[in-house]
Amino acid sequence: MAFLKVGLGNDIQIAVRGGRVLLRPYLTSDYMLWAQLRARSREHLRPWEPVWPHDDLTRTSFRRRVRHYQREARDDAGYAFGVFNEHGRELYGGLTLTNVRRGVTQAASLGYWLGLPFVGRGFMTDAVRTAVHYAFDELRLHRIEAASMPSNTGSINVLQRVGFVREGLARRYLKINGVWQDHVLFALLAEDIARGTGDE
Image (cartoon, rainbow, N blue to C red):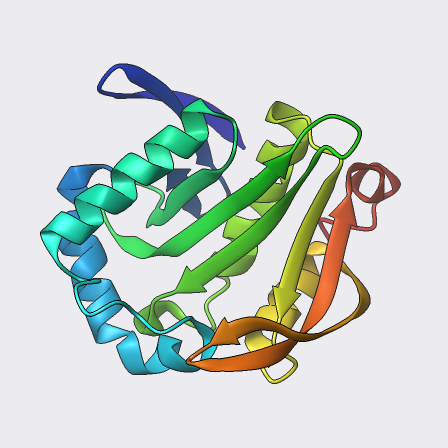
């Protein structure tokens, strides 16, 4: 895994190379790749995501999204990455480390989505494993949390392959596709990686 610095206007952000993926911050020039993959994957993603705003796939909305991600990274509040192929030219999906808490907590929440054409090929497992190392090694976090609906076996399998430990059930935790849904809660600690629990 390698950490690469890339320029985003006045900002320097980190791109992270995994085994078969490259995680890098979105650029406004990624709009067409992003919008086409999201549109093509809409029905696949609908059961697992909040209801999309009516203008979600517009260029204006994407620019707002990128500015928000850049602001969060500057403030050390969150980090958003496109999940690209190793050359950075094909978009597979997206991954976020949000709600970064410092002080005595040193934790963040992990979220991700994968475009329909790339499901079942190991790309998201590689992306999550890469993000975990970035979070622990570069961001110096201690804990990464994730939540999945009990019926989302694909997402649960990704988390378990990387070493996340199930910690419980949060009732009606997130409003997904217009309905408050229960979620299984998972977490991975920096010492889990040191003990070899993760990265199997």
